[in-house]
Structures are given as structure tokens and as C-alpha cells.
Image 1 (cartoon, rainbow, N blue to C red):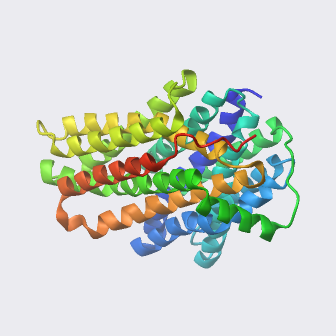
Image 2 (cartoon, one colour):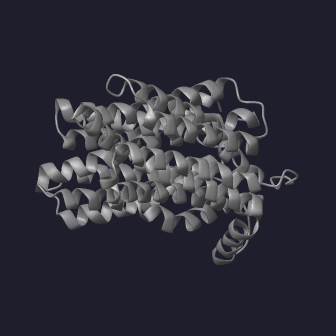
Length: 387
């Protein structure tokens, strides 16, 4: 299977999830006029992933054919978003239930697909650059499509489009498929216990997982900080969206570059240097002066560029430091923790909004530096466990 085949499966599924996180709050406001309902729907689409991640990972580790599970998860996502677009005629409690189920299924096509990416893209250095590209397509294109659909129609139309994207990913998964892989034996509960023990006790994977999650505390707070800074500098919140878009576009361009030409330094060092560069660029962006937010936007875009290779290296280290018996668990739990940390970062930034946008953006840079500092403890002689 080609790189294009993997992207045809992963990108639409992740795009639908990334776009729905924006569309669901907008829909709730349209349908109910209640912002709190919108926040609850968005949380329902994201929060269950961390709870379901160990089970999903154990299932993928134990099946020789993961494609049908990915397809079912995508189908459930498509159904949930289509139902959500009919909020009003369809009772809100039923919509919540379906969105919760979709959130619980999402680890199959987030960390779950990442854990089998090496079966598809055989060049180790390119594998996770391509996988990171699929994530970034979701995080950039998904919200952009929702914004366009909302501007020319409504949030209901946006959710129909997100449902269609998920369905496209399902069709691609069923048509293209995934290569068969060895299936692990043993009970699910025993496997989950082994996976949890590995994540906690194996120092290299523990550091990679914690560092990756901490970095998302900063990423999650970026939107709040950017809006606050835009209000301080220009008197309008509109520039905040431009700053956040610059970060996302920088990350997307970077992942395109490394999927074509991978970085050739050890992944632990790459992860450390990339997160540190992101933190420094973010702090400088907070202090940058000039007309409006021009230099801040440029520097935040640069900080997004620095995340590209480091994120791909993080995914590569997950594979290298995970035995086959628990590999999918490591990927799904790691992805779930990053998603949860992103949401927590947004909440913390909102709670600290009174500190001002510049202070918040500096703090976000410090968080990225902290995630880089954690990788200083990564053992240089850590042996590979991926056989």
C-alpha cells in the first residue's frame, strides 16, 4: 500500500474529528442558544477517548485484521455527526449518547492507526512523518472546512460534511484495507495490565508519553492566549484566529516536508530540540513588537514548524520502545493523554485569562520548554524493544 493509501484512510477520519470539535459548539448555539450545551457536546466527542484507549489498544494488538475495527469506528463517527446535525428533531440526550460513543471509538483511527502505520509505510523514517501529516491535515483542514461551511450555510451543514468525511475514510479503509499482522494471545485484562505497567515502569516510554502530553497543555492554551493578545494589541479578537492558523499551517508545512525528506538525527534528540525551539519561538512571539500582530503571527507560525519533526520522532519512539504485545495500547493511550492535555490546557488558559495575553503566551512557551526538559532524562543507550 502507498503513502497515498494510508493518507486516504487516516486523514478523512481525523479531519472529521477535528472539524466536529469546532462544529458541535456552533451547532448547539444555533439549535439551543446555550453555549454550555456546546461545550458539553465538544467534551463528549473528546473525553471518552482516554477511557477507551487501553481497551482499543488491546483489541488492535489482538487482531490480525485491524481494518474492520477502524471502519466500524469511522462508521459510528459518521452516524453520530449526521445525527448531531439533526439536533432538534432528534432529542438532545440521544445526540449526546451517539457523540459519546463516537468519542469512545476515536482511538481506533487516532492512536490505533498510528500503531499499524509501519505496516503500510515501510521506510521507518518516513512512517511517522506521514502519520503526523494525517494528524495535521485533520487539525488544519477540519476546522477550515467547518468555518467555510458555516459561513456559507450553517453548523448543521458543517456536521453533515464532517459525517461525509468520516464515511469517506470508512470507504477507503474497506477498499484499500490494511496488511495482516501477527495477533497477540492472552486475556484482555491481563494485556491491559501489562500495557499499563510498561507505560509506568519503562523509563524511555514513560518520558516520551509524559513529554508529549505536557506539550499539549501549551498547544491547548494557544487559542485562548492568542485571542487575549489580539484584544490587547488591536482591540479586536479576530487576529487571534490568524495567529492560531499560523501555528497550524506551520505544523502542516513541516510535516509535508519531513514526510518527503525525514530528519536524520536521533529521535529523542529531535523531540527535545523541536519542543525547545517551539517554546523559545512562542516566548519571543509573545514579546514581539511591531504593527499589530504581524511578527507574533510569523513567530508562532515558525513555532508550529518546529513541532513537525519532533512530533514524528515522538511517534517513532513510541514504536521503538514498545514490545509488540502492548504497542497499540502505548499508541492509543499516548494519543488519548495528548487529547486530554490539550483540553485541559484550554481550560487552564481560560481560567487564567485575567493575566493577559502576553503573559499567557510566555507561559505556553515555558510549558513547551518543560516538555523538552523532560526528554533530557531519556537514556542515550535505551535498547529498541520493537524487535
